[in-house]
Image 1 (cartoon, one colour):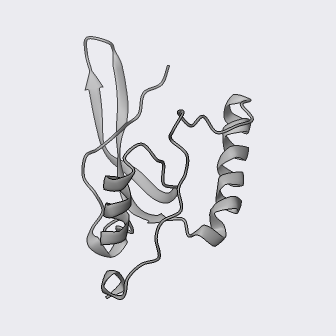
Image 2 (cartoon, rainbow, N blue to C red):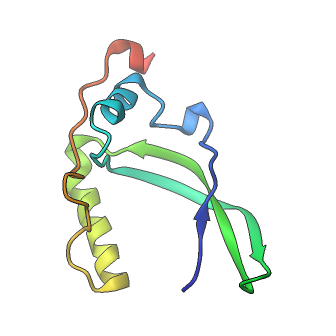
Length: 112
């Protein structure tokens, strides 16, 4: 199986759509719930595991945003279609209790 990992860094504030108080509160209040996001990633570095004889990319999130409620169905369809094309699965594999939850509207201070 091919390996890809994700680096631990987050994008800078201007491209980090998850850096709001409302989103932080949603994760703290509902830690098992999933939040649908779109992201742009690129390879940050390449790692080699000589013991296993594999070389793999370490990805970095360059930009991500929470998908607004009015676009959630369309983005979930695209995600499901991509999953089906890649794996043959027809449903997104959310863990029990990990449903996507709507986020509270942003306060004025979150958009400033």
